[in-house]
Length: 327
Image 1: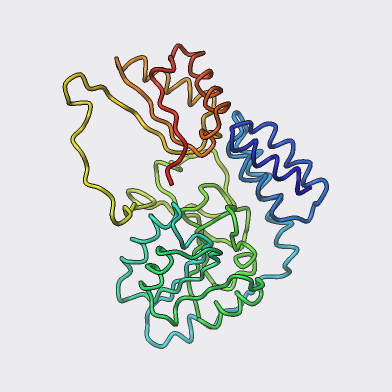
Image 2: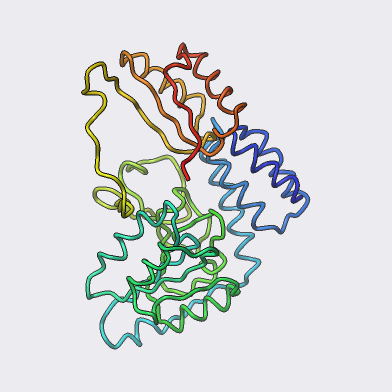
């Protein structure tokens, strides 16, 4: 099963999502109780072209029911509201990504902009801490930073209850090293999921999913086990990393310059519809180019495959700049 999982991850990385899904299905058959294999499969469903949203929802809901059953009954009584003597709302954020990870570039401003009406606690399941971890530690008092690495769901839940957290926010969803096991126990009376996974978790113990009108417009046909909490403008606010260079003059405005579009992401997200749409844009904007950066593009065969897919739509390799991610 571990071999199947590793191969599926590699196929996912280079964009062969249908074969990756077949292997994840096999992993789940071999080890049906593995949360890691089943969650990998759930994440991959979001990448499969033409996968019906109802099928994806049904898979998440079925997973959530089975997962919660494994951990037993969630808490249904909380003393936090009654015992809060200072009148401040206690909010906890739980994440495995309190390091140099994309989630942190959105979570930073969230933590920074809480007013004095809130007490913020950070529950970190971060395996490899770095300078971003240190920065986040400094945003809260020492007593409100909790490393929960290696702790059981029950132990983390008890710590959250001891901290009298009134609102608990998951920042990972089904991504790596998440603590949905803690959320399943509902140690806080109100629970949200935000930012890390823009689909349902499938857990009824999570009350709300934070989104906006663009990602999930009113009347969306997509189903969620959570109630959607739509922010009025945008669900996330980006904080750029420190030490980045100044913005240079726009090359497109220089003599002989051209427009360069860019996408720094994963090859698996380059669906047929995505490539067809981008190819149309490149054809419509004379002399334009497209820069794609992705980890999988370090491999020559993957670069050739991506170039060939654009060539099917009349886009030559001269219009593409395919690069691996920067260190």
